[in-house]
Structures are given as C-alpha cells and as structure tokens.
Image (tube, rainbow, N blue to C red):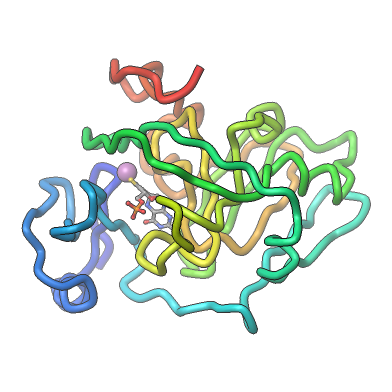
Length: 222
Ligand SMILES: Nc1nc2c(c(=O)[nH]1)N[C@H]1C(S)=C(S)[C@@H](COP(=O)(O)O)O[C@H]1N2
Ligand SMILES: [Mo]
C-alpha cells in the first residue's frame, strides 16, 4: 500500500481523493507521489505519508520530551505558547525541487525544550515522532541545538493548519523540508541517530540544503 516517492506522499488512490476533497481543487500533481497543491497554497504542496491524520487541539495536544533526559516533560499548547517565541523568515526547499521564498515560521526554540528537560551526557541525538503514527525524523544533538531549529506553532503568521502539520511541527530552517516533521508529538533523546522515515528510504540524514542529497540548491540558512 505504501509506495516510495521522492519525499512525497504515497498512499492508495482513495487517500488521494480524500486529500483532494479536504484541500479543495487540486491544480497540480507532484510527479513523485500524490500531493495537493492548493490554488492559494502559496506554492506549498501538502505531504503526508499517512492516509489520514487525527486532529489535535488545545484540549488533547501533547508534546513529550523524554529518553536520555533528567526531567521528562509534557507540554500542552498553552504551555508552549507561554514560552518565548522566535520568528524566522527563510525560504523553504523540498528535496523534490519546489521552493517557497520568504516563509515566516514562529515557535519555541528546540534548544530551550532540551535545556528544560536536562539532556544527559550519553545523549548524542534526537528522535522526533508524530501523531500521524507513521513519520519520524532525527537530528544530531548539535544540529538540534541550533538557533534556527524550532517547534513551530505558526507558519506564514497564522496558527499552523492541520494540513501543514498543526498544531505543532518541527522546523529545521537549514535543511530540506522533510526534516520538518509535521504533527510533532515526541522528542526523544537517544544515544545514536536513528534514521527517520525518508532517511530509511535513502535520503540523507544530514539534510543541509544545497549540500546533501546530490543537490545544489541555494542554502536556506547559513
Ligand atoms: N508527519 C509528517 N511530516 C512531514 C511529512 C510527512 O509526510 N509526514 N513530509 C515531509 C516532507 S517530504 C515535506 S516536503 C514537508 C511538507 O510540508 P507541507 O505539507 O507543510 O508543505 O513535510 C515534511 N514533514
Ligand atoms: Mo519533501
């Protein structure tokens, strides 16, 4: 049932129709999979490797920080919003080629959540899991501590929509967009990098824009 597209969505045809129904008229198809491009989507394609994703809101969204930490934490949306928010405007680059210029993201620095949990010495990497039940991602601890890596609550100066991974997604500014895991629910400190969903399917683990995956795109961050 799952095929392998280049960073795209792959699912059964019924899932494609369901997605199109949700997103409205679809004006483009990604050659690598089943995607929807909204007429007013600003150039974004909506990707999900899961055929349906539950909605989480104020009352039932939880983000867990656990693994090799001194103090495992659970955050609700209000708690995340109460922390200092960073806003960044960078281009978004998908490894399949599409790019969206100057896209604002806003949220909590991942480094802040790591510090609050107290990362233990044995940890060298971070694993990210999602409430779609399917996707995962990874970063080294050094990458995860960068100032341009956020748990984003807002995109394009609006609350993150469900289609874009709301209510919270990872945002890794300097890397291809597959790193920016949508519907983020878990942050786990690990002894070693555990390759994420697309990384197990051949994409580079260190996904720097312009310096990985055999591509030479202009970097999205320095
Ligand atoms: N949970 C989850 N996160 C995901 C994906 C996914 O399928 N599931 N796709 C990734 C890929 S390949 C891209 S290009 C972006 C797409 O984000 P968008 O749907 O907001 O455009 O999300 C990334 N994060
Ligand atoms: Mo992608």
